[in-house]
Image 1 (cartoon, rainbow over the protein chains, first blue to last red):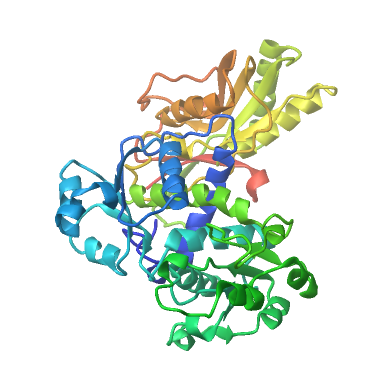
Image 2 (cartoon, chains in turn yellow, brown):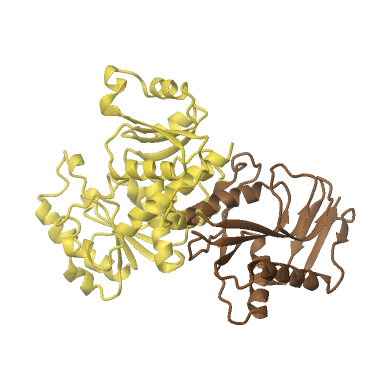
Length: 305
Length: 184
């Protein structure tokens, strides 16, 4: 059984929880590769997907995972809701729960929105991203993909490269990788480093070439163009020149690097098209594993009734 | 350690289990003759040691036989999946064939409430529509069936009380073969 009633963040769960999620996810991966990809496990569970922030792949991945588990789902997006009319988060959610919903999958622009909700409602909550705080299922699927590739994460050198400051993927990955015994280095321009990054016990580098030769695997973060209201670097071109992953740089690192990306890719910005499509890239495996991992998370949370 | 209050009752005398397994094999051969469209499927986790043993025994009795063998996990198909106090941990399903039009021999160690078998029938549909399904169990715990499920091939039938446990250990899982009822 998971140690927590909710999945709010990687910070709150244990190594055993992660192990149980991975074990369950690998069985679900076998299920979703069958001719008939559906199991009836959650046929008496209703899940509400509340997306107060835009998302395509995470929402689709969660929805597909719910359908594969035979759960009933309702979808809600902030753009078409009463949030625009001034309703509070708690009122919105309580209205949905009044319709007998068992589980909430929520993405919200404010960090801690899921924690707040967990203090006020009974339903299970899965955090699908809260501001720049955490995105636990992404970190779980990244680590699951690495485990598939390397067998274990113990002692693995993993670099997270790019916009660390705005990235919930980075924070969740740091927690997850460290819990599983990997060494973590973050790399990016000083302006895109959180001020207190050293407190997380990770190495910090501003040198891409050096980081690539150190790492066994790299997670290339997307430059979040929508969050660049302040100028963190002079031009995109300059960013790409310094931190963009190209074939030349990949080859210069000499060893077989595994390249990950949480998507959506800005081809030619943080990663070149050739690298994204190369045999080093496990980007599409990540997407496939995402469904299996999310099935495991929702299945395990729903069991603890 | 076992508590001193635990009582055990062995269901088989030494050597008797081997005879029973061989008898079950011959019953299968009697029904399936050449096993041309038969497949064997053992239920995870505890049916697989019995399944592997039975499959190997039949292959030994009919040298040129190649009967497909698979292992089926039914966890996600159980009707009590969310009613258990402890979590139900899934095991690997290893089936590299389709059951479409096949005569399936389903193997499990103990038949009790029948709910596992119901889940197995459901889980099997993901691999096609079998021509027929037969059930082989080593121990049939009669009396406490909750669903209308019966085994076609039975090693031994017992009347165990609800608070007793029927424990099947086979040497494939480590240790010695033992089939017994434990009560406290």
